[in-house]
Length: 284
Image 1 (cartoon, rainbow, N blue to C red):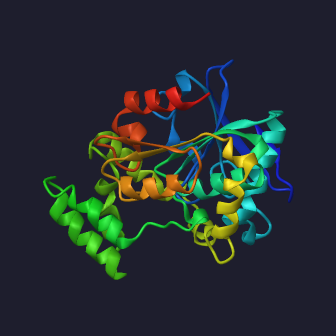
Image 2: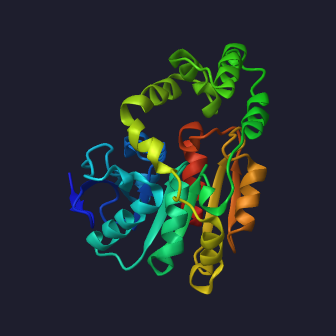
Image 3: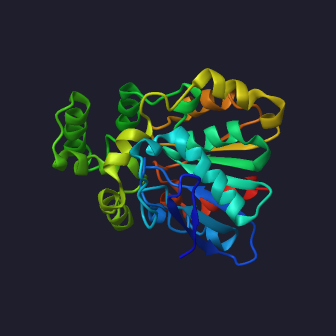
């Protein structure tokens, strides 16, 4: 398994998957702080591009940093840049999922000349001052009212929103994040806890991680405006809702929003062919 050394000395691992001679696509996992294994081959995207999946510090095969404060999202931007330099690439296509949307946006804001394109898959944008609210989650949840699992899952969601969830409640709400609650989704959801560094996740968006006004200004500057951005969101996802994705796109010059029908938070599982087609048509 290939590794490289971050600027603070932490040894970080990455996984290479897909076409040997394909253009590299640097993939940043969400969670936050979930090992990149859950991305898999991104619905077959590895047949078209060489996927470089980074295990963020303290996750997967990557080392644990000496300073836990470096789990903060903005502190990990240097890890992404160190990987680019290690790979010997002048610039990279970046794909980020979920919470990694913030990391990718901060990377593009700090190193715009190093980003050729940015694909944000059901991604957060706290870095831009846009967050997902309980109201958004409720709006998306209501779309699933005809599902057989809905009544029990909705009761557990209420417990989450009230701040009194049990472990069983967290398990019960998993169907809301998938377009189809089938065997594939069951297995994928079951892997979340063992793949996630919970302590690191608590620090990821801690105070000081984001300065939205500065990031918006940096991404509106000429150097960053040239970077094409795709926001791929699920029709059934609450984070972000399609209309919230449109708000995010309005802050990113030249951004395009694509809504994948019937998809949740992991669109490459819900319709691999559509997901792969959308991403490959966007990538340079």
